[in-house]
Amino acid sequence: MPDTMEYPTLTYAEMEQRYDGEWVVVIDPVSDDQLEVLSGTVIAHSPDRDEMDGQVRRYQAARPFSRSASLCFVHVPDDISFLL
Image (cartoon, rainbow, N blue to C red):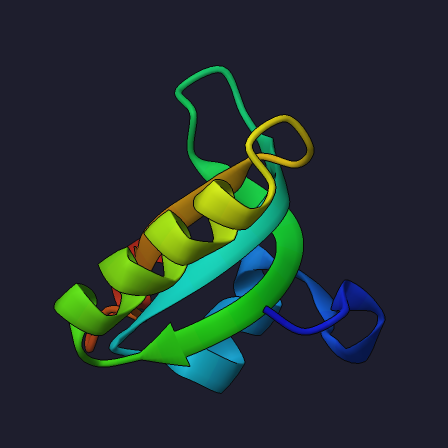
C-alpha cells in the first residue's frame, strides 16, 4: 500500500462527488455517533466490493496496530429533492 501522503483527505460529500456508486477504502475515518463516515483519507476505490475487501485486508495486515480502515459504499441518491 503506497504512502498516504499521495491520497486525498475528503469529506463524505466530496467522496460522493468523486466516487458515486463505488466502494471506497478510507483510513483514519472520522465517524458520527451512528458510525457513519464523515471524512477520511481515501486510499482505494472501485465499483467491485470484493476488490476493496481485499484492499482493506492487505492494508490491515501490513499495519496491524497503526491506523483504522473503513470500507463504505458511496452513493448520491437519484432524487435528492427530499433533502431540500
